[in-house]
Length: 390
Ligand code: NAD
Ligand code: GLY
Image (cartoon, rainbow, N blue to C red; front, side, top):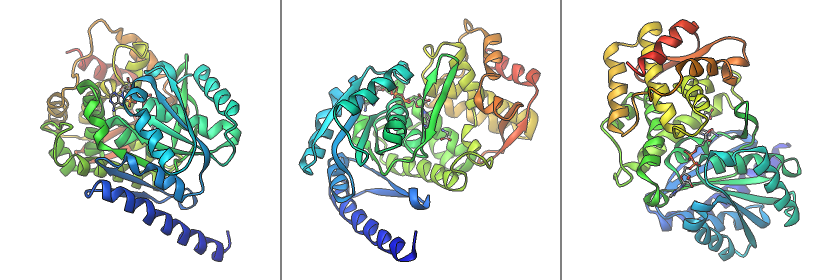
């Protein structure tokens, strides 16, 4: 890109950002913005209560073309679909909504093909836009539809679960599952914009809120001791500092993604703390016994003890992680009916393990400090899994 064009684009972007930030901050005086600086793929994450209504202003201020396809699940569609569609229509853009069944089962090639067909039948052009309205399942699925339809179109993330707000809507990982494993087909495709309206959390079931807290605890554990200490005693959707907590998590993820967008340098892998055993538990239990965040909570507990045994985490800090999980209503104990051998076997299917040919783990040396690429033998991993039923 020539420097004049780059300067013009920066000016245009600045103008657009003023328009939508103006609209959103009048809805939410406490609007917080985290910029994800990925040069040509840079974007803002907007966090605040009541900001969904500003979505249309951003779309209208940008280079987005109609029709806007809002992809959601049936539960979120019933709660927020009309409000989202009205925000788009108010900005003078036509839109249509596609609803898929709620749950992990929708992150499949079959549902993806259905989305592609609906986009094609509605003649969504290359300049068209997808709005992903929902939790991480919708963000991953709709994001991958946006990455693959017509070789890639714009998309906007409107996360409606805590987990999606603090984690899955940011960073551009999109994809679907195969029967062989989770997230095995996908692409990096950054959103153009993320609108995290905290008001959406009012209807989120407490169990789902708690599942999101597993990722919040993870951020504190890997990168921010003060955040960890704040959330360790429990967080609720009504807490006055929720916007600040979400902002801190998003900022941690944004800084990591900026340095290692495609997870090639080891830094982004830090975000997988607790996920190796967590994913194995999800797989061994058919993605149905535990919510994603609950499996991650169990994985965090196991990874805390691995850190004590292998990387010098003080035992008292592992116990603090356990207490934080408990105080945020997350499971500490693996259901005894779960086949632990199957969990161990599933470790080998985790793509983060398989892709570099060995068992590589993220471990803590102290709360707030993590390192990736650690070697752990299968015996020690088995001991950590046993710890979950001890
Ligand atoms: P989810 O998308 O299944 O949502 C959980 C449930 O809450 C669903 O039943 C949904 O209908 C309902 N729901 C959503 N918003 C609601 C609201 N505001 N009010 C009431 N109900 C609401 O689950 P999730 O926990 O958000 O996401 C899990 C998925 O995210 C997994 O597939 C995981 O692999 C993925 N993930 C992706 C990344 C990434 O970087 N791309 C990171 C973490 C997790
Ligand atoms: N959730 C892990 C990542 O985005 O890299």
